[in-house]
Length: 220
Image (tube, rainbow, N blue to C red):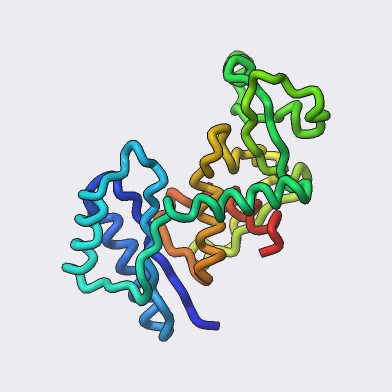
């Protein structure tokens, strides 16, 4: 197996020291194992992403001597692929269209707050007939999260980390406007780029459990 790592910054500001550290770890790990280091610019937040920030990140990495082995990938150019995967999941029954209105979601959150419990969405549309869908609601596409068992992350730093699947909700993979969410797009991109090791900040550990659902739903 050829080790392939990646650094995936969002161009919403300058390259900061934490990002540089993450890029360096990915670069050195790939070099140590005779592998490849890749760069993916996660510019799907079109309101906050700027060309100036992108150039500053690229120039900062170049100044540090951290050079990717392939042409950088821009996530915004891959929306059609993200959508393709989401629709395939929908067709296989690994995902479903959710027609909850903003008012219904707000009421469910308020109820969770009143009952002093964490809000984890259980959508009535998970098993409801889409023929009953309201005509005035553009649906999102949600993954059909497992309800039993647990998800295990074999982390090379922290070891085996577990979470009960009851803690995972049916996260959105495609918004009502057709754009992919971060947690969905990242998995599709990592898979297509052949990434073997994801090295990133500890704050992303909880994201990993949700991303594993996307891997499994696609048989990856």
